[in-house]
Every structure is written in C-alpha cells, then in structure tokens.
Amino acid sequence: MPLSAAARALALRCEPRVNELARRMSRESFEALPGYAELPDDLKDLEIAATARHGIRLFLRRVGDPDLSLADLRLFRERAAQRAEEGMPLHLLLRTHSLGAYVLWRALRETARPGEEAALVELVDLLLESHHRVVGAVAETYVDERTALEADSRAQRRSLVRGLLDGVLKPGHILLDELRLEGPALVLALDLGVSAEGPVGERRRQRRAQTALDHAFGTEVAALLDTGLGRAVVPKECEPPDDLAQRLSKALGTPVRVAHVPAAGPADIPEAARTATEILRVTRACGLPPGLHRLEDVLLEFHLSRPDPSSHKIAALLDPVAERPELLETLRTHLAHQQDRRATATALGLHPNTVDNRLAKIGEQSGIDLSSPRGAALAIAALLLRDTQDTPSYGPYVRP
Image 1 (tube, rainbow, N blue to C red):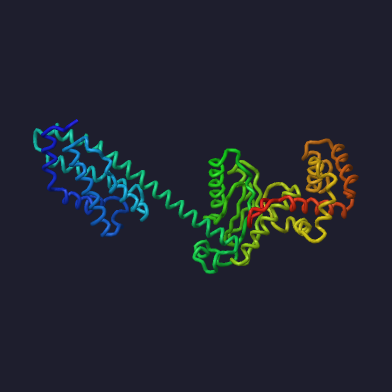
Image 2: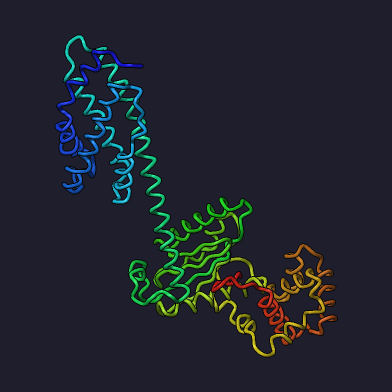
C-alpha cells in the first residue's frame, strides 16, 4: 500500500542527512555497544559506515515504493559473512543493526513537524517491517558462515589428529604445540558401542562423547570419534580419571571400554595407538567387563594373542566347537571369571550343572584339559588367536 504524500515528504527531508546519520551510527551510537570500541577504525569508517548508508538509502527507496522488494540484501549478507569470518560476535553485529534502526527512527522524529504524527507512524511501521527482514538475513548468513568455517576447522583438525595418530604428521607441526603434545602423551582407544538411531543419532553420540572426554580431562581432547570407535591423545600429565569409562557410558547410554597407553613422544604415538586398540580387542575376547584398561591388566593375554608360526595350530584347537557359539561364550565367560563355575553360571543365567556340562563337551571335543593351568592357558590363547583371525581391519584402526 503506497504511503501518504506527507510520509514521503517527511522521508525526503531526511535524504540530505544520510552520510551524517551513517557517521553518527558508526562513530557515536555504536560505540556504546560492548566490544564495539575494540574494532579497527578502518572497519568502522569504511565497511560499517557504508553498510549503514546502504541500509538508510534502501529504507528511503522503499518509502517511495513500498512494494520495492527487499530481495537486494546482498550487501548485508556479504558484510555478515565477513564479520563471521573475522570473528565478530553475532550479538554485536545484530545490535548494530537494531541500534541503527533506532537512530534512523530518532532522525525521522527530529525531522517531523507538528501535524505529521500520522506520517511518522507510517514510516515507523515501514521501518519495523523492513528491519526484521534485514536482521533475519544477517543472522541467517552469519550462522551459515560460522557453521561452514567451524566445519572446515573441525575437518582440518581431524585430518591433523589422524596424521598424528597414524604417524604421518611432520615433527614440529604447530598442532603439537597447540595441543601440548610435544612431549610425553597418553593415547586412548575407545569402544563406544553403536547407536540404533541412524546417522543423526550417531553424530549426537559422538558430540556427547567428545564433551565427556573434554570434561574428564579438563581440556579440549584431540580425538577421532567414528561409528562405535574412537582414538584420542592427551598430554601425559592429563591422567584419565578412574571413572572415565563410567562417565562415557553415562553420556552415551551404552557400556564403554577404554584402553590407555603412554607414549614417550610424538614419534611413539602411532605404536601406542595400535597397542591401545589391541588391548581393547583382548579385553573383549577374554570376556572382561567394560571399563578402563591398561596393558598391565591383560599382560599375559596380550602376549598369548601375538601371532607366530604356531598360531594357526593353537587357534584350530577350538575348531570342533566353532559352530557352537554357546560353548565358546561359556568358555570365554568361565575364563574371565577365574574358572569359577558358580560365577560363570550367574553371569550367563545358567545352572552350574549346565556350565559343567558345556565345559565337559568343550574338553571332549577339543582335547583341552580345562582343569589344568596349561589347558586354561591354551584355551585363552586359542580364543584370542581366533578372535585375531576373525577381526576385520579398518585401515590403521582395528575394530576391538
């Protein structure tokens, strides 16, 4: 709907003041905003003042033609993207636009003559209607740009952390200094379980896991978190809390295994990462409960699981019961509970006699005497070596 002749005349009297109003906004009014005074002078005098002039002129053009589309918000969007890239806080950017609209309103009020109250109301109505569109475009562009910048930063950081864990990051890289990893470090491997909520749910779990790690260590942890898997590295002085696995389990809603291995320096991190991953695999193969594990916790089992020329023969000892998963699970649980038949029965929800019967079948069909120390060691080694053969490789990271 066209504005009245009185409203157009009032706006027309403000046109000679465009440059003055833009300077007032960029050099006087905005100075009261927290953080504005610290901005560079050339930014205030050139880009912010130019944006203010563009906004005032765009408003005055709409006074002459209220149906003029506000689609030409390109300059506002460009400036919002630049401010996002430079790191200006969004609240400060939006406040400049809101305060700019207020300064323009005051200029209209100061210019209005007695009897032009109705014309002033028309202009204020148009100003408010235009302002919310401008602010919406600015906020949308700023958020999109920050999201893109943060995504690029995360991708770059993930690439660098992956290079560190895989041994391809060059010595002396700035990332090592930023993460305080120039010296001794602690490398973690994590089995986080898998979400049943699809890709979106999995990404949410990864964010929760990262947050839990950051809180547990009191710093931003360099971590690679994928579907159900994770590797991380922290400075050596950041010892993992005893309840780290419990914290992660609470955050994710699934049992979590964590293995940690010290590294003397950046060059030792890849080997420590491989060892930590192997510790997770061993703890799972041995039926140990989820929790925080060190190499010392599974030293014998770790040694027994190392492949050598005799490995295939040891693994083959359990071939006769390979098609009976309930027997293998009973054996695994029995060994994990120090061969306590009652504890094994409780863990599996079985009667102790059923456990005895299953163990007897394993002994008969495999030839392993589970009642002797040597037989128990053979059974442990066979389970671990079979697990090694069945575990698929995921590049430098093996699924535990």
